[in-house]
Amino acid sequence: MPQAQRSVLIGRPVEDVFAFFTDPANDHRWRPQVISTASQGPPVVGERIRVVVNGHGGRGVPADVEVTAYEPASRYAFRATEGRVRPRGEYRFAPYGSGTEVTFLLDAEVPGLRKVFMSARVQKSMDGEMKALDTAKRLLELG
Image (cartoon, rainbow, N blue to C red; front, side, top):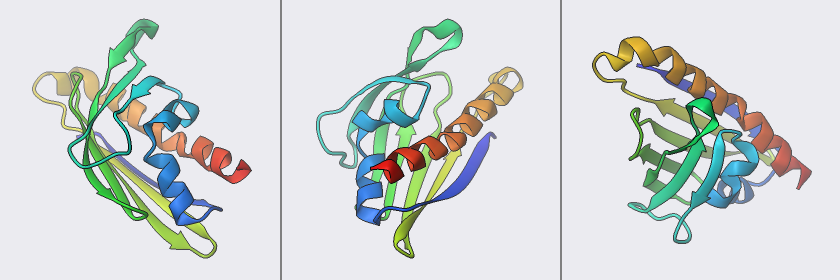
């Protein structure tokens, strides 16, 4: 099962960092594969967020998610509801000195024969999501 985990320290208060990561309008700013997002307002558990990502050949592919946890300033989790592979993810936020430690966890079950053909590609995508945390950190610290 592909999975990834990474923590970064961001020199901003936990409330600011949590607000940035839980606002779908920010996703395209720090996640290079995201083309667009659309939500009905602030995230709440059960909300579905429309996400379109770059797919094979550069075409837009639905990758909608459902919010599964929303605990202000501490935890935000989701599960994919669209696509051939449906990852689950979770962000954890904790004060660290005058900044914030963000931990991002991702995993996905790749069913049946897809496991043979898609696991490496899914892992590469997850690794890219982890690397994108550096962009989020830079954006937040620049203000």
